[in-house]
Image (cartoon, helix red, strand yellow):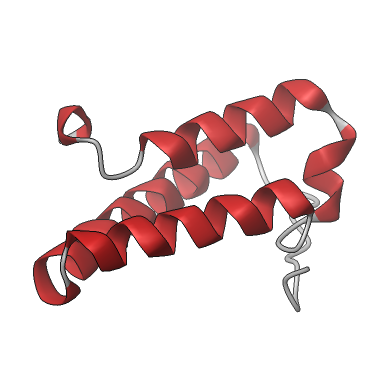
Length: 86
């Protein structure tokens, strides 16, 4: 599991949405950067290992507690690097 978590109590829902969208865009940027600098195979390996860590609970065990949240997060990560994502 990831080493640290952030306390978001007192944070408004709109701010949380902005932060989550920004993090998703950062992951997309990372995927493109890896593909451009290390090759498509490296980007695919990074994505596969990130998905494996998510699905195994190595990144966030709480994600496994609610199937709707789990499926949403996994689907967003699976979509990373697809050419239709921009």
